[in-house]
Image 1 (cartoon, rainbow, N blue to C red):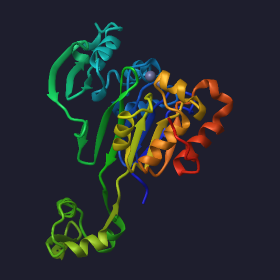
Image 2 (image 1 turned 180 degrees about the vertical axis):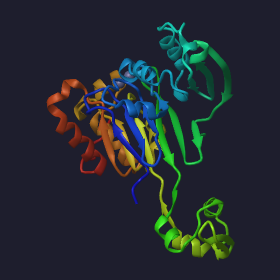
Image 3 (image 1 turned 135 degrees about the vertical axis):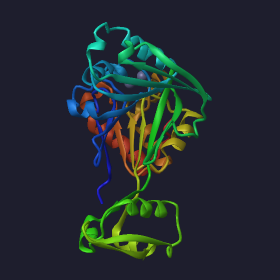
Image 4 (image 1 turned 45 degrees about the horizontal axis):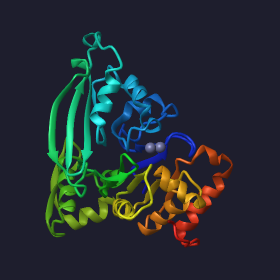
Length: 342
Ligand SMILES: [Zn+2]
Ligand SMILES: [Zn+2]
């Protein structure tokens, strides 16, 4: 069964950091960080529904303008999430343009922004039709154990990490996916309808296997209603694919307290995108600049027992040492290298 979410790095590991998550069964994408995004196609940018920004250093946020440019004049809402001061950062970006002609557009872009602080989330909305003036301000309590974003098929969690400025780590957790086998529907002459939703709901809610469901059988002109048990329908019609967990950590430091927060957030991820700007022996430089080394990225991945580690955000200084960065991270991850990471 193909996974329904397909994450990829926006740029090569020396380029601006960020991942784009493509939805296989929907015209939709999610961005984690929005640095230089010129490698993404216009259709990828139009599909973006949510943008999670770790922090607003320029290499993580300079692509905001391009994303705005492509989506301006479209009837859609893009939801942005970021750390402390993020609403002001977005407002500052929007204030950099002149919006006197917005009423000539039939369709209006809405930007919803949430910024995460310890124990608190602040929200604001900017609508093109209102010349992107700040509106709908709200403040709510927020614990890092709660999802930052939630919808029926997935949740996104965050943690506030240390980078001399607050920097957010993210983990997207997809719920398991129930797929109905169309070939079986056709061969049994089952007519699709509301009963399929009922079937999915019963599986999701753990209804007893002998519960019954009425199924229209035949064709739309002439059909009879037959009763089947949940177990029969589940066995024959439903394929269950487990949801993926995709974690994204960048621009942070290997230190007590911070490490535990990262491990908790990314635990058991199927794909762990982790920054690795420096080589293993540069741990002093990492501490000073508030960045991870390759060995530290691998060590965090091992502690969190992730399935796959994808290092990125390599320092351009190490252009000739790409393989070394990958090797050091992988060896610390698999346990081949167990030297202390700090
Ligand atoms: Zn960075
Ligand atoms: Zn940074």
